[in-house]
Image (cartoon, rainbow over all chains, first blue to last red):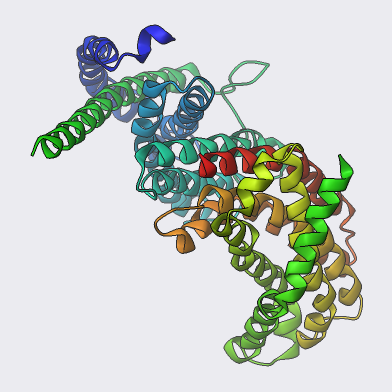
Length: 240
Length: 222
């Protein structure tokens, strides 16, 4: 934990991870797209529209996973005052918001031909929309204070409070009788989806994960550089 | 332990009474905003009765949202918040006492005028009992959850609009169950399950929100 608190060391590790994540994402992207768009069979009911699922499901998983990362970083920042945890959480939030927006958008595009409507106010959709607002609130709270430290701490508290929403999203399809289909992959009795569709989905998932790590490293780098720049400016003003 | 908390409660209630105009503004907003709906959607009684429960709940929610800056802001400005933080009682309990006072001088009044609004919306007679009951269980939750958002924004550059962004997403579940409890009871389907969930949300927020709000207050006082 303390080993990672040094920004320079942290950045060296992040730099070492970056080529693997970015390279892996670049390799997996065409493979995943080919599997999802060409190899995977069309659904007997949904036809070709089922292919939207290969983007929608990984994006929705990432939306929740990234929020978990934000909350974990927030907790580490609040409990141990770990500076890099705060930086990581802050860097992850906009990426998570984008994944949430993608999940909402693709779901809506899929919903129009399948359900006959762009949007329904069922429990799963509403709770994901709340997740999106929580991301926005987290990001806005970060920038609401003169003192960046204060903004980071306040946003961290909000990030932890928002954690109550994650189980609601996960179990909303079980608790309520909704239009959104229930979980078909993470189940006690094994996935109820055919392997010919499962593998493209997992490949896409791997691509999303690696893409997230690569962008996260870029954003962390940018933030550390921004902070260093602010410090240099302060120093220059102090000398002048 | 109880005495200082009761003192906080009494002090806040007295302050609310002395600033009665400010306190009643929330109720006034509640009634005024409701009177816009007959003009907006037309005065047909069946339409008004149909949307009445939802409209009254949404307005109660917005009224609580508007009153949130009353919770910490003046104490933060005149320094009494720091005194409270230094007191021997845990800040979490002080938060609970202040939220209780805030609800007694805000949310409770909304509950009391709700029957009148049900009449204005041409709702059936049972609504005059059912609607206040759901608000009675729901509005304290709104105050408790809102206290976190208001505390987080103490000293922020632009608090006003931000508090809505922070707090409204967390209000949505309360709204959903409040409205469905009221409508379920009015349509004869029974709203007991939703009322129980409203009660559960109240208990959970009473147990957890003071910790988050107290952490946010300590941060603001650093």
